[in-house]
Each structure stands twice: as structure tokens, then as C-alpha cells.
Length: 183
Image (cartoon, rainbow, N blue to C red):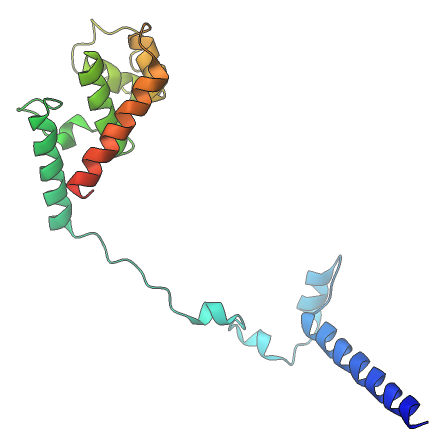
């Protein structure tokens, strides 16, 4: 008899605990948001504070990029590209990379131009979809009508080249240059 009474007590506690947890979870199913919004709430969730402890921890924000450090990186990269013969001595990287989405894309285009001996402005026009003020009369391809991928632009300008391999090679070279410059 004692075992039966103890079993009933344990079952009653389990049911009570389960019902309390289910109640704490709120209404479920269709219309739950309406029911939750219209029901008077006496719990701490209505205070506007999250009960999620992960949200209590302040997330560290990266400080804004130091403009001096960015300028130093750009100068270092500019000098490196000029020493490799990718960027003419009278041109800076910022001017050459105008209209590009990323600096890495621009540096890859500079490598393609150098590696394949194609005009950078033609390649820039195909990659950005923006026609530059430079002389574009010698350009093959679509020259500034719509932005293309690097391999598509290579194929349009120099169809005999292995466009995919050349694009991959140039992207690797650009990544190495940017990493070495600290960008």
C-alpha cells in the first residue's frame, strides 16, 4: 500500500511539474501570437527584458578602422603593385580601383591585365559595367554595358585564354598581395 501511495505522489508531482513547464512556454499552435498578446501577463517576460542569458552578455564591437592605418596599407599595396609593374607609376590604386566593388576584385583585374597583356581599362569596364573616360576603341567584348564576372570578362577580351584558370590565378595573386600589405 505504501508503494502505491508513493507512486501516486510521484506521478502527481511529475504531472504538476510538466504542466508548470508547459504553462511557462506559453500558448502553442495557430493563433498563439493573438492569445499571447491578449492574455494578461503576470510574469517577468512583459518587462521587455530578454530571459535569454546569451543576450545579457555585451558583444564587443570592433573599433572603427583607423584611417591612418588604412592609408598606410593602401600606400604599401600601391607601392607593391607599382614595383611589380601592375600599376603605372603615375596612377594610384584608389583612382585605378574606382567603380570596383572590392579592392581584391580590382587587384585581381590588375593581375589579369598584366598576365595576359590586355588593356586594364577594357577589363575594368567589363567587370564594373561602367564605361570609363579612357579610350575604349581597342576593347573587345561588351565594354561597359553590364558587369561581368572575371572569367567572363577574360573570355570576352581574350577568347583563346583559359578564362577560369586565369581568373583563379589572378584572384590568388591578389589575395597574396592584399595579405602582404596587411589589408
